[in-house]
Length: 224
Image 1 (cartoon, one colour):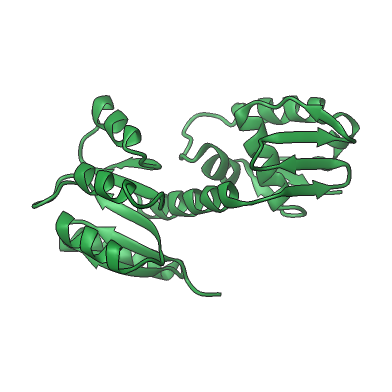
Image 2 (image 1 turned 135 degrees about the vertical axis):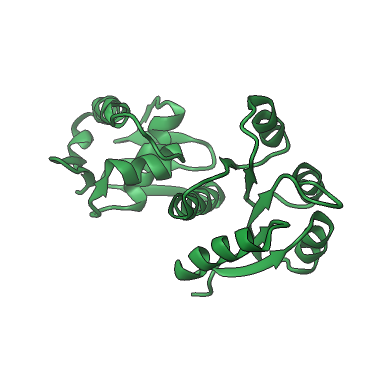
């Protein structure tokens, strides 16, 4: 399987190297750009780029301008890096269609986890048709879940959580891994938010909720 190609855009060469080294270590292919104009040119000439990691403060074109230009042609996932922590700056990025926002300084390992989460979510969003497991049917595009033929109303996060469980059947999932992939951020509080969502999801799935097994002291596993 060909490695996902990631475009890393930052005017600081040391930052590009740091990010590149960690991404290559995680088996991704990396292309670099040192300013906004170069980033747009590279993206337009490489149609197989799977994700962009984009700094905000850059010469020629800043990150917002780059994101705006790319969104005219593509919905490729974009993760923005910035030294700013102002809520208004984050909102501006999300309004442009940015998928994630990471404030410097950051842990390279967390960045890689975010990359994996965004790519997983992107692939899930592109999934067509239904996923069916022992009486549970998920129509990804229509955002509908049926249990034994009956429609079950799930919240957005409950739907994402069930989707993640179905995509990882038989895999023991820690609470941290679930948070990074379903909630898409590193969580510094306790993990009761997951336990609460799992409890509600089990209840709504009825007898099929027993497929979600608790792994004491670790997390959960979806197993038929």
